[in-house]
Length: 300
Image (cartoon, rainbow, N blue to C red; front, top):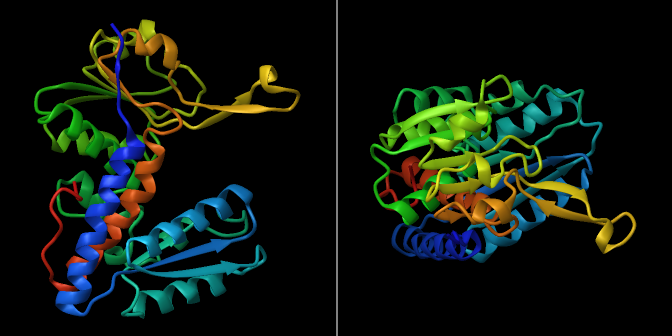
């Protein structure tokens, strides 16, 4: 068996096209232009690239992009004051504070200072609680992207056995909640799970979000299963030259692809969906704030 490739890059392009069409409808029909504010504190190179990409894609779909680049020495009070201004700004419908923050800043305090209605990352404690209780909420971008890919590949997820490897607040836990809402039978596996290989082999849907390079091999996978690899890991690649690296997921792609029915590659799988779903969440936040019709197919 050779697994079908789940092309997240192509699917993300389709999501952006849908978002752009709704942005035009909001702007031309209602005089509302969705606005996304991104706050970056410090000079982390990876975060800088990510913020730049977010800004470019925000503008490309017709949204207003607001970027705030703050010095690494920015105080807690200064950052909270900026967020308070953005919460009150009617031109801003989505607020994202790029993580990680410098160590002197309290991430939980910062995240929970964002208005839940504008929390397009879905990390505010109110949105976490709403998701856990099956109510309307803002949903974290990466799990939302995974859910979209799964629905597109499988149609109804009802009754399928799903295993999520990883229990982070950003991916693992919300992913499990979303799969439960789609009526899967869900197991969350982690570093203390006994016989984790056997647990994974039960899965019709296997989501790997543990942050360990190529931890999951083909021997862990049920024949025909759908595998979503959330991991993005840089590992040494001596074959490319001294000091060179390659990007790999949490799944050993070559062995897994021989067993799975469908699989996401790394890169080019889940990664492109994260920013696409950030734009979708900003659109959803705009619709809810202004009482406009929510976009179909772009929410959980």
